[in-house]
Length: 595
Image 1 (cartoon, rainbow, N blue to C red):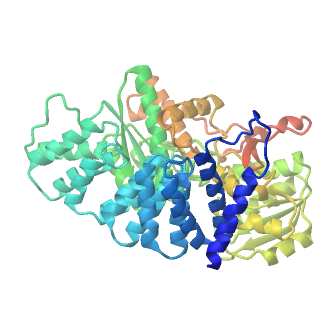
Image 2 (cartoon, rainbow, N blue to C red):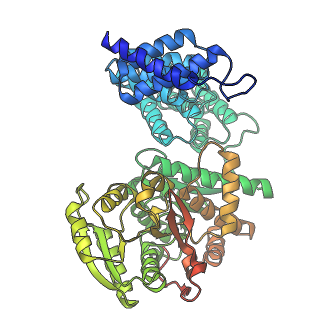
């Protein structure tokens, strides 16, 4: 009874707040004159207030009443979402599932449909209802827009399909989800499973041809062509005019599954944009052969060898990480095959041979640039360093210290932290005691999500300096208020603005629902370098090496302040270097500056 009285009181207060003041006749107030709509609005506000107070029992009671009376009201999908959340908060998983299922059925295009599909997917997965979970994740992916969980949904989808679904369920997905994110993959997978099981070559060949016709731009197309070519060797007659290979081939090594799949997918998409643009402009068809490294060096070398020996790739682009790129670079150097590394940051990769090129700034260049900017431009003399207790962290710290001292700075504190540490109170006290005017933290975005708020909480007020990995909009959206005016290099500094603008335009047209990222841009730029060389007449690996050596000079441009970025609020802006006309000096990069 007490709970009901509380509910009635809140509803009454909400009603009085909206309608308590009389108005002169003929004057409008902005509130609907439709009594039903006004009543729905008042009840919705009251339910939101109940949810904010944590009274989930009353939320469910009031929400059910609302949905019985106002199922067509604009607020109905929100109320249904709150009812589902209330059930979940009360530990009633079945009730939450029913509410979310009702929501996506009644309001499939509503604002709260993505949340509902996500929660349903997690519910089904937790109960090993794998087919239902697959459908729910697929629906979530289709309606979620730019939600940060889209990459996780894609990974869960692939894992469930690969490891949990039976062949008949794959067949059903192919029929029911052909136009979704699953369409390309499940159609390829059903053909691949038929091939692996050694089934009739005619049936499997027809599946592969159907897949390639329905999904001509699928990233699984190259593997499908390989399987089809193998079936031809077994006696399968490929349809007349069916293309199994392009005139020229470009190899791409990137992780399309596993921990780094989101970054690898961006690399693939960036490469695809460059090739599509080139094909439209020239009419020349160059085939992209992508190989899934999973971020593993052994797989990267195996696939690089396959691209070189079996696919006769004109050049290779990749891989994502320094370790796997080093392994591939050694092989390419031995075989005389051009390799462009768009993302790896290891300092010595380009020293592995004349066939290896890098198109991004290295950590040493970035670190020296930040140190010079701190001392010479911002005129900070008392500097501190807070670095991870790793080889990479120590190297960055030593390099920053050396550059800062050379420029006239003073290191007042140099502190290492273990990556397992979560509490930075003691470290913050040391930094406060040292009183630095600027603090260099060569930490990853993940680490800065933990560090930045604690520095502010414990009273460390100083200019923050960091690596190019901070050029991350997700990081600034989450902890931008603690990184205000933090300074760091742009990780795309060597890419001309015209190429950046062109890439963004192409990306928006091709992927309007997904934000671009630097991995896609860097790979676009690297592939474009190969295509430019191809247009100049490079048709062999030797000719490609000569053209790339001219196109990618390896100098890294000038170490100027225009390569710096600064956090402003929760966004990232170019560093306002024009405000420092007397100290802005662009210095040539060192010979080893480009990764």
